[in-house]
View 1 (cartoon, rainbow, N blue to C red):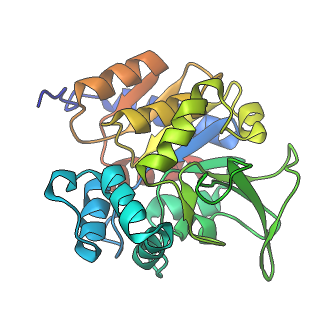
View 2: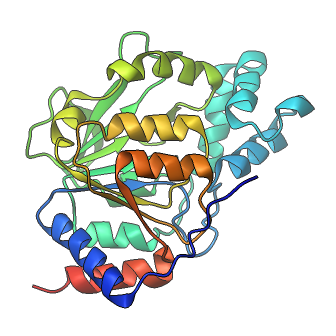
Length: 289
């Protein structure tokens, strides 16, 4: 498989300037942090990649060999032959467990942003980043909700309650692939994505608040891999009509399709280790007046 190496040299001055730019956007509220699964220093006790999640599901339910390694296809097999409730129960079993937050969760708790997008299934963002009175918007499956694409919940001192309205001043956690809290409702099977991908080009599944807030904003992608068409398509549609200045932090190699995606969307690559280099330097700058 062809790769584009990201081991390019970045001078200390360039790195300092770029991190300073990100911190400026963070402080003035014009940044959106977009989280993937690869955020943790140590294994958190739940899957942190699509291949790992697929393998864990296939440990629970035997799927045909031709499907192994294919998350959405394997999930569809489980849904079709064992029932949707079996699939959601397995997802809950894998992800609804206590785990320590990653360093980025701690920084986001200390320096909150109006919008954080979390594209993975763990409970950590829902527990740590949504404060009492704040909002979570999470995608729902058409297998369970025929008349809507997402649900809106407000965190209360006693738990969560459905919300009818999101105000411009609200802080929002957006979970475009669903959530474990307050209920296990996720997009993971082929059927889930067929429904959404049919409409996403015309923005129907994207919440109105997100469409309004993202305008002119800068996106910072952390822990993300855009090595398949679905993840790229979702990111592209979520960030539509935002600014032309965005960032991704990765110290690995970039596939050609990822590289083209970054170039097309105006995403600058920071070839830095997320937890040992980028986040400590960012936190240092955020802490300055």
